[in-house]
Image 1: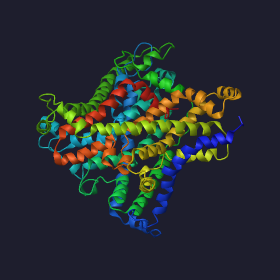
Image 2: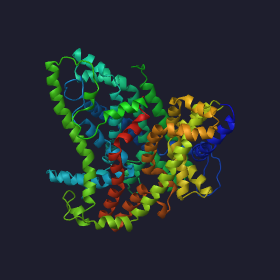
Image 3: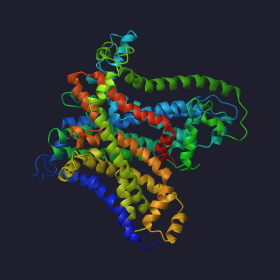
Image 4: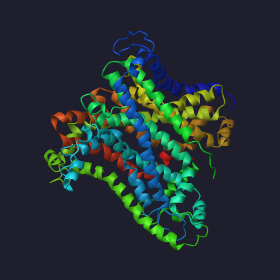
Length: 309
Length: 312
């Protein structure tokens, strides 16, 4: 397999690598470089300013608000989403009434539930955000009219307009749209756990609660952990940008009194609205650090002995 | 791909009477115990209750959107949950033509079609070389590619904007296609490298001994063998690229080049002044239904494809 090998390798790698280097790697390197300049993004001239952007960032109140919200997203969203999904997946696969011939079984119609739960996953996050923006509308939205319909007309929250509620409302939408994917993911993982384990546990008199914590969760741990990281990166990055940018417009963007501003949205505003490209990339570097730190912490906390089966 | 098969057997056609468990166990069942049985029954009621509630929570907003798209503007505001007095099909035709939904659809089809093709071609080429050939720098290039999976796109977006501007690619559909391909490569290369490693080497070697060039071996022998992997990664990329919002929002601001998701958001913002809510809902549902329909038809493949990469 030696003949013409290197020519072939170069020929096959050239285009993908060139595209990747030009549109992904190069901008990343540039971003870090620009964070040390005073570049506006509007004119080609700029000068080096050292760590000025970084010290400005540390004094920036809105920056700290977005860090706080992004961290809330990264901690709360995976917790709720992965927790709910594990719960549903366990019910679907193990929670059913015992039938003849099987030690454990999913509930009746579990395949139907899996299909339905996955619906939001195939929809664009932009569409989901728009849909819920209507549902949250205080005057004629679906949610408030339900409240009115069941006799709770006095409770008509201004969901997205209330600084105390807006962040929660946005997070609910992200949970709604991602749980289904993890249900299906964990179900696939649970399907590969040998049935004998459950049989043995049930023979020993274990109830389903114990079964879950002693068998399912430990054997599923790798999948749970990668799901956790995946959800956290989504919550820190593109998905949170879309929901916050679309749902909470406000005069400044990012909700009433910056109550929903997140790091990616703040980067976007600084770069493309305020003409502060260099400062925007500085915040972007902070976002990168937060993301990497998040992944490192989850991997560190989640490290366990790998179970082979 | 063994795992994918197990995974997909768990997902059965809707309405199938037996759950996934009943088909698997062939050994003798353990003797049922009375207490466990009672526990199982109580749990069954509880689990069904919770599962049904979540199913309703998923389906309701979607049904509500479909219903609303057939209502008049006035009805949307006065009685959001009432059924439409009659089916206002004019909302749909108005959205399709006047609100440019047809243009957004066409743009999305062009961009996603082009980038999906490019992603699969270039991704499999790079993955094949990285998986099957030993050369200096192999590991470095591999990690360079997969490192891109964990970096926040938004950081690169500011300089990328100016890279695109300098190359006259900003606000063009082909520019967007190239960027989609570039940002889809990390996962695609990661997934397909693992996949190519699992394919037997003997077939490729036989073809090569028979005088086929490396290129020919790849396109005529390896690529057909990699079809299951290409389908999985293709579905993943299709959904991601079809639903992309961040990249077009920044890199594609020309009104007539907008893709579906950003076109809809644009409509929603400007509708605030014009007040054509029914048309907007029609547009939303229009963008929603084709993917939902495709998902329902191909749900086995979609689920297998999306979970294949993550389950060992």
